[in-house]
Length: 372
Image (cartoon, rainbow, N blue to C red; front, side, top):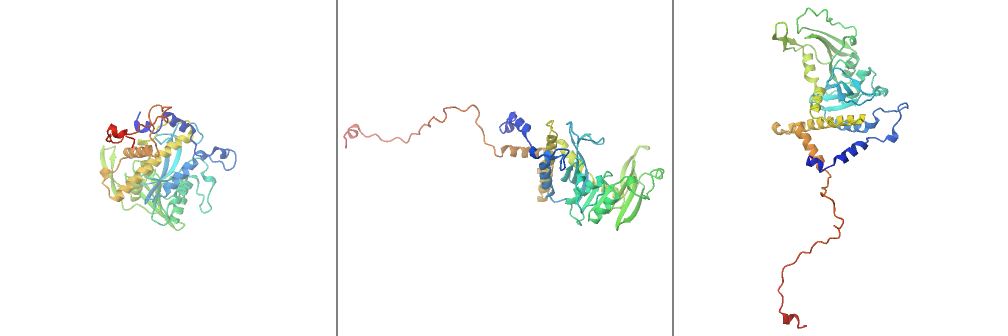
């Protein structure tokens, strides 16, 4: 086997630890039908510890919220089906990430998140409440900008975040825009590609801009800080003429495309070197996923520190080498080297041979025997 690993731990010992490892006291587990039951009790200490560490890192200015999938074939009632994800079955995560892909806060979907609602937070619905919970760590009135897709976006959410001092932007479903003044898809069907229509209104003292833009499909966005201008030209492929054309792109669309991909970038980093150990225990699959998440966060933090120091980018470790260095250090930590072979039963009885000193001059025989 690979010597640095085999000298640290045998396969049997690793399997024994994996069979018996627990992260919480099962004697204090509250049954499912009783009050106070926690569906994530078995792994709750790991979740809380990691979240507390991630929250201590200074936030980036541009943040996004999106779903993440922990793929698994384990049979469990918390598994979700997401047809648009590469891995369609698994445990669903909601993640607050920066533009670099660093995860600052996360929660695992269990269906119990809305049972406890703080008094200082409004109940804006199941999906909007996810944004409220994850954005609690964002400092108020510090020019932070939050991006999310149409699964979360609603007009009351945008207004509440703006009042809290957090700028937000997201795509939105038409049925979540009451009294929408924007033209319908049918009305825009004859218009050219790249055309857009904007409607600005004030809700509870907050200026909200809503916009519809025609690309391959129609996309509707609302924002509390961005609008149509300044526009830019973007390249698109024209199937009819089989050539590349330039179309007008509103500023709000540019902002969304530029800063929304933090969680997707995190997924990309995690997917390259993720742990592939199989387990029938549902919480072990979550544990492996959280290890991968922690490793990617550590690597991104290492890159941030090196960049702030002005280090040569060519000398900054890639993720694979960084993980190898971390693994090497963990294998060497608090490890005593063991002797190969069976120990001897009489080893303690064997006396070490005394070293001889330097040779001395021997006196003549008559002097040795004169008894003086």
